[in-house]
Image 1 (cartoon, rainbow over the protein chains, first blue to last red):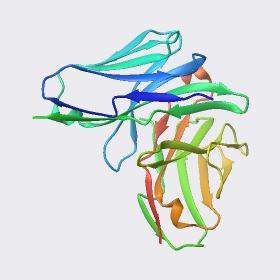
Image 2 (image 1 turned 60 degrees about the horizontal axis):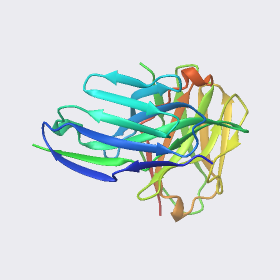
Image 3 (image 1 turned 90 degrees about the vertical axis):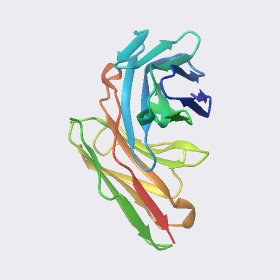
Image 4 (image 1 turned 30 degrees about the vertical axis):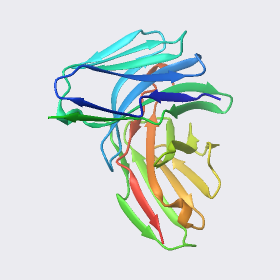
Length: 114
Length: 114
C-alpha cells in the first residue's frame, strides 16, 4: 500500500523568503505526482503535475521536482507572499489491482507573514 | 476550464437520514473519486469509479455507497447518516490514462449530522 508523508506539518516564514516543502512516498512505482493548494474550508486547487518520466515542472514562482528512485518530491516556492498562505498537499497516482488510485499526504500548512 | 461541481457547499442532516451528495464533471473524465477530509486524518478515499456503473471501494467505504449511472455524475450515498460522518466531502475526477491523470476537485461539501 502506498503511503505519502509530508514534512514539515506546518511552516511559518516572513514574506519574501524562498522555501521548500517535502513529500515522500513508499512505493516508487507511481504514474504521476501532483501538488495541490487548499485554502481553509475550500476544495483543492491543482498547482503542478509531474509525470513519472519527468524530473521537474515549473509554474511561475513554483517549481516541483520528482526523484522516483528515492521516493521524494519537493515543492519550491520563490519569493513567498502572504497570499501563498494555505495548506499544500502532494498526491501520488499509482496502480492497484482494482484500478488507479490517488493517495494524499497530510499536507504542510504554510503561513507567510507580512 | 475544468469544472467539477458538487451540489451543495453546506448540508445539515439528522441522524438516520439517507443523504445524497452529488458531483458532476464536464471534462469527459473516466475516473471519479469521493474523499472525506478530517483534521489530523487528511484525505481518505471512500470510493472511486473508473467507468459508468463501475465502482471500487477505497479505504473507508463502510456506511457509504455510490452510484455512477452517467459518465459525468458520481453520487455518494450515506445510507443512514451518523454523527461520525460529519466531515468535509470532496469529489475529484481525472482521465484514466496515467499520463493524462491530472485530478481536479470540486469545492467540497461540509456535512454536519446532528
